[in-house]
Length: 221
Image (cartoon, rainbow, N blue to C red; front, side, top):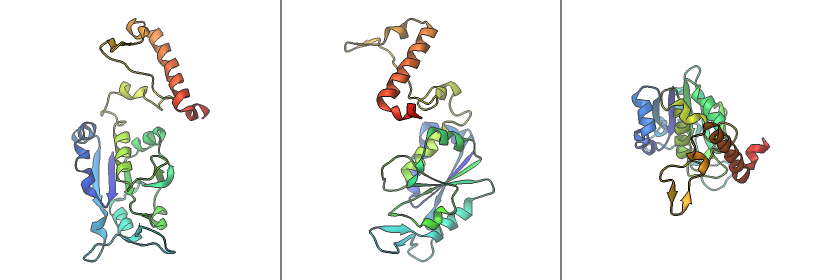
């Protein structure tokens, strides 16, 4: 699949493409990552991509022209455009799977006080990665890219993602490795028995317990 990221800070993605999982997917041609500088679509010597908000208020707002011109330059029939902004619906593992099935995903990174609302009218969806505010949409775009690319066939082993948090509607069960005893704390005995059925039952119960303690909202769903 191809992911195009529209941003005013393309330099924030230079090291991101070198991360092991991302680099592996790109190297194997499983995924293609395109970083588009919105400023290159702004006219004038200063390449202004923002302006004051109509009606007053603090902060600057990203202008329609440069963003939509950048979008027009990369969008093709069948592309899905998502805007990353706090004023969106929550991005989830289910969304990651939906995005991973796409041929071309376009991510627009908001910044400053926000985006001119008319830009959102040209998007297929508006998303946030959590109920908090970041300086811009670049970090959320990286989160989306990472969560989507790792789901693509051939990037990771399928069994590596099958029992992760949220895949079964709950958080993942606890994990342990050597040594069996560390600073007086022991690995649960059941994990050392070799009895796969008992281990499976223990993991299921522990996943339920952890979800009840940390994310009971998942069980309410």
